[in-house]
Image (cartoon, rainbow, N blue to C red; front, side, top):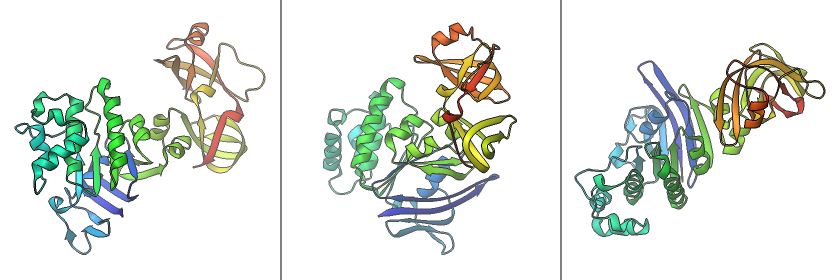
Length: 343
């Protein structure tokens, strides 16, 4: 049991061209910047928009543009949960869950609400629910129809921070118990890493990287993924023990190899000094502090200069270095702290 999809959508100058394979019981998180085509992909899989290509679920062909086959949305075993819940406002929670069920639908709806611990809300109207409660009901309503493909479009983005973590845990339990194919669209890296077995990163309508959360964040292949992982990503051409960076400057890195490469530097590996450091660091640059962002017990400092970087230091270091916007500093990175791999 699985999903195989080759989806091409062309509209208003935008082109989506994605091949996606997902196994039963696997949760895939689709990430990417705004306009990457994430929601368009979900709508295509749900049958809401016409595609070029082929979509097959559990051996059943849902779309095949060459054969002229298109199974309407209502006949697909697909469940779609939107970010804004979309509960019927004139129906109680019980009637919302019962909607779309066949044969003793009210009993089945009560059973689903009971298993989710929501039975006491059965007679409430959607307007009486919190955002987290409404989203849980929307998910149960979708699961009650027993779809084979579950599509979730930013399911937690409309929730307050105070309830998002609890709802995420509930969603994680529901996904683990769901036996079909699960695809989640999100812009939140924490959400993706917490819920997904595999990440699929899209940019400009195409898949640019995919793999386990650990693999993707360890070796980002785009600026978006590097920002998601919170690391510095540099591109250049390697020559044995150094890399000539595309933006100018040189990076000393042992065993860099030859050819086009990507180099990752963790912000904590970037040390800052008032005077040019002597000794072990082989990479030293003059830099200007452009932005400071306090995050917990660390401060992320965005540096401008020949090699733009983000450094992560303690509040104490900020005071000692007299760091503020426009401050001139020296940035140093040990060659052994740099990860280099083929572009």
